[in-house]
Each structure stands twice: as structure tokens, then as C-alpha cells.
Length: 156
Image 1 (cartoon, rainbow, N blue to C red):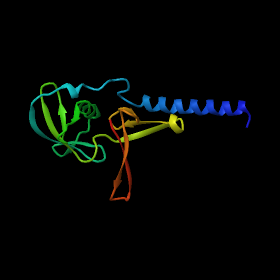
Image 2: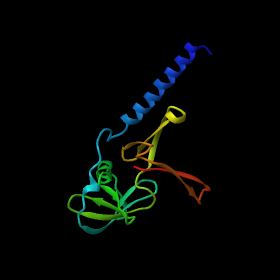
Image 3: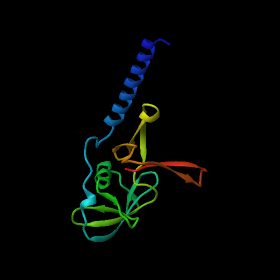
Image 4: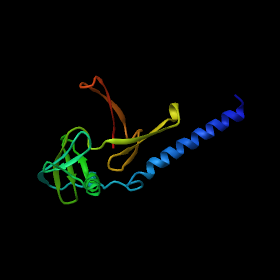
């Protein structure tokens, strides 16, 4: 392979990877929006809500799925898991407990670009967040007894 041909192939690969990532981000409803500063809010605990996030990422209130995605997205912006292991919806004035069966978010799309040490893996969640795995968003794998395989998790 000539040096010119190799350079062209690398350029095409980079352009294709960039388009894939741009497309993933364009499908995000919250791209560029920062999270609420829930870690700085310390309101009183106001009790538990009958709200649950199931393993498939569906949010339920009083046993009924929440069908309005903008409402789910709003709730997801004030979600916090505390040192006690419980998950809360937190505002500056109240903190209420909710149940999470597995994880609060589900990756619905993934983009991989680069290779080796330069590889970047980016995820889009079911609520529209875009997260790049790395030092601030650790990627880990857990043995799943039911299937005998590994289940991936990334910190959002």
C-alpha cells in the first residue's frame, strides 16, 4: 500500500467516524446542556415516591409507565444516588426517594472512533444524554448470572 493510499484510507476512516459521532449527538435532546448541580443541594428528605425505573429504562409512577418523554427527561436531570445507596429526585427544596431496579439510564446508541490508546467510545442514553467513556465516566463490566455473560455499565 502506498503512503498516499494509506493516508486517504485514514482520512476516510476519520471522516466516517466523525459523521457517526455527529449523527449520535444530533439525536440527543440534551446535547450541550449541563446537568443540574444536584450534588450541591442538601434539602431535607421528604419521603419516598411510588416511582420506579425498571431495568429496561422505563419510568413508572404509581405502577403506570410515564408516557411523556419530556417529563422523564426532566426527572432524570435531578436524579442523584447518595452514599446510602438509595436514589433520589433532588431539588433545592426537597429530596424524595425512588426505586431503581438496575441502572437509571440505558445506552440506546454507541459510537466507536479511533483505535488503540486513541479509541473513544461514546454513548447516547434513553433520556438523551451523550456520555464519552473515560476517566470521568468509567466503563465497567459485571458478571451477569442469568446469562453467564458480562453486562457493561458506564457512569453517567
